[in-house]
Amino acid sequence: MADSPASSDDEEAGSGRIEQLKDRYTGLKAQALERLAMLRGAFGTEQGAEILRDFFGTAMLSRVAPRIGGDDAELRVSLAVSHLIGVAVLRYVIGFPSLRDVPVDRLIEAISPRVQSYFDD
Image: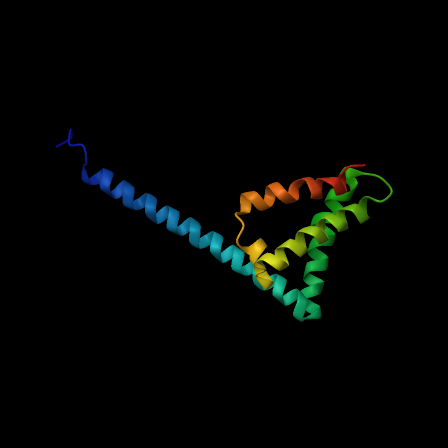
């Protein structure tokens, strides 16, 4: 019946949404594991460190430093990146409990003003 509150289409839609959420979660988890492997590799091999240097040199220094300007823009961007990498290493690689267990939103709230201070003159 078309007027039925729970038609088979509705039931399939719910199932489809659960599958979408599962796929999204699985994709995010895979990305996180890839980043974790990259961080761990950077500390274990020169090749890993070179990949990170290239990434941060290209993605951060060359793009962000010109936008914030100033004589010491590259230094300030490097300090911001080092701050973020330090938190990431302690949270994801070492598993430091006070960083590992805090919700991401709270961590962002705590870090944001400090990272922003590197960009302010």
